Image 1 (cartoon, helix red, strand yellow):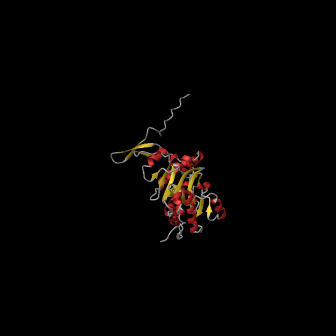
Image 2 (spheres, helix red, strand yellow; image 1 turned 45 degrees about the vertical axis):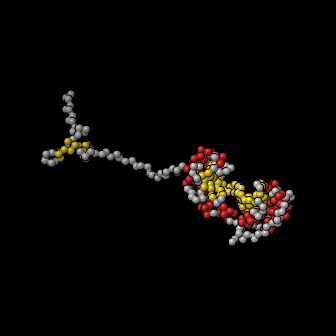
Image 3 (cartoon, one colour; image 1 turned 45 degrees about the horizontal axis):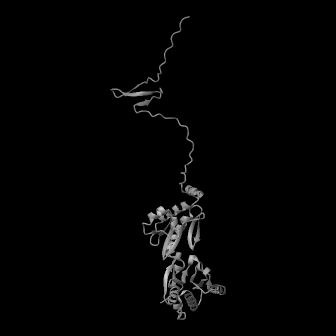
Amino acid sequence: MAKDIAAAVREICLSFPEAAERMSHGSPDFHVRGKAFASFVVNHHGDGRVALWLPAPPGTQLHYVEAEPDHFFVPPYVGTRGWLGVHLNKGLDWKRVAHHVREAYLAVAPKKLTLELPPAIVIKPPTQSIDPDLLDPLSSKRAKAVVPQLREFCLSLPEASEDTAFGWPVWRAGKKTFAGVHRYNRRLTLQFWVGHDMQAMLTFEKRYRIPAYMGHNGWIELDVEDDVDFDEVRQLALVSYKHFALKRMLDRLAMESEPPPAKTRATAPPRPTTRTLSTPASLSMSPKLGTYASTKKRADGRSASTRSDRSKSTKTKSAPRANR
């Protein structure tokens, strides 16, 4: 059966008396009576390393890091305490890996467990490197389907930019982060600020939970590994963006959100027209008199026109001149 690096690490670390495994910050730790002697860390904060972090005797860290920088490094956090980082996918012989783990065990284990400690175990080297999903969590099929759409929407907002924080992509409004992506234990999640009131409402759904570190500031985490509603995601991103955006960004967002004014067709100025009066059906225009005449029907069926009183065409005869 094929063995990968994770299985080889487990085989070595659990070979020591009372050694046990537990998860810590998403990575497996190996400890003896409550004290850690090895941490197996893959792609910590996006560093791309497949490594062991081991407590080492004084002076050992500096010696190995300077002598073999391709195989050893100073790990974060615990490096200041003399721990040694060991690359596991750069060709270091696995007999040496087992030797360094044994040295780490001796540094923390009780003396009763180390008095008759045998030599380091000899294992068959792994034939596989590491699960690609662990080395690059965003290479999963689900991440490739969700992250680009979130990226497209976030970058469409005024003055938004993309960055990385602890190895994960985040989007900022100016200098403030308003959205982020994480994937732990093969579950893809998205983070947004929603405020404490909305937090309490959303967590009634199993898809939502309050994230570590940022939850006390009003952030929420949405699990999208199984299903995703992009309208919901865009709404969450917009709420978070508006919380952190500056006034000029909000003003620009409001302008871009307004529908464009309707385009009016240019028309020629209206031509002057003669007003046409609507004539009732009972009236007809007399071309000769230029007056409206009421049309009546006689008993024999002919029409007889009666002149209107509005206009009189008769002329009064002038009175005869008086004799002087």
